[in-house]
Image (tube, rainbow, N blue to C red; front, side, top):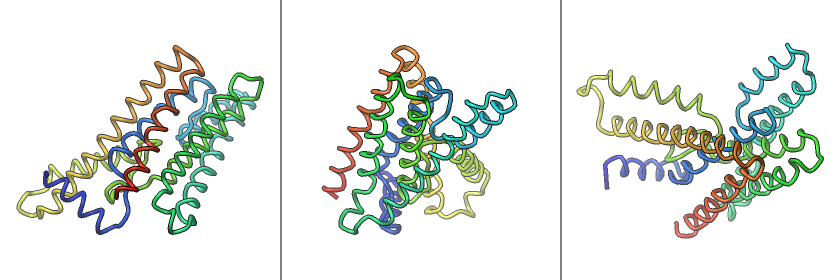
Length: 240
């Protein structure tokens, strides 16, 4: 076992919280895939509040009020999803709290499935946007720490900023002035954030390619891996 893995375990013991690293990587992939898919299908992001606000401003400047409202709706739905994820994690019974992330992912599956069924069946784009953004908001609210480190799986701006700061601090500080434990903690943070960032980008690329080729059928690229992540999360909690 490497020193970084030892630090990871110790951090989990101290904080009493944190999602398995592998689950977090998978959810980052889902976040990127869903973001790219929703933009291609409905011209709105699912997990990017800043991006949707900018797009809404652009639409408003072009006097495309319908598209402006859709993009603002995406922001509201995403924020509502975050609130729902936090409420689920906070107020679920103590006996079920360890399964709160699995329950959040199950809600995601149902919302993604609803989005798939609604899209192209004569319904308005708003219904699709609400389902997708609620799903990603719930994911963002439910997953907020991995090995004691704050993470986001639905957008990467904050994580990339933190990663850059940690990297500069790590390589610019004098080794003699930094304790080994602090160095290991910084390395662990860098490893987690960089891997989740790569997973998100890979998911966005995969979503763009698959949805461009297969249109709404490409949404199954979210449902299948998310179902596997639920199984892995439940198994990990039962064995843990």
